[in-house]
Amino acid sequence: MSTEENQSLVRHYVDQFVNRGNMAVADEILSPDYRRYISPSTPPLTAEQQKQRIAGMRAAFPDLHVSVEDMITEGDRVAFRGVVRGTQQGAFLGLAPTGKQVTVFAFDVIRIEQGKLIEHWGGPDLFSILLELGAVVSASSEKR
Image (cartoon, rainbow, N blue to C red):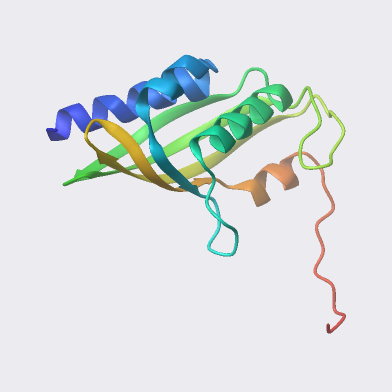
């Protein structure tokens, strides 16, 4: 696929799947071998788990919207910087709904194979989301 086609596919993913919650789009553009790497210390998510993750985010933030601010493509990889906005109307990471709006950055790198997203790294700044929602975040001084 060309650079333009890869970028268009990623924009379609963000607009239709993430911003609108269109699960049918996920079925169309996520490879059966799709892996979503949220953290180096946790196993990657499958396509089905990614769908559940986005559904959960949209339940917590029904007006969830990611605007793609920058996009760079190199070969089969597309990297983008986005701004994530939403209002917490549902439970999120153990926090009861606050009604607060959040605005944070997201950084993602996606690898495309045969016209489908196959690997995906990065995501929104969850720490900043928690702080904006008023969560108390502290480091324990206990040694384990």
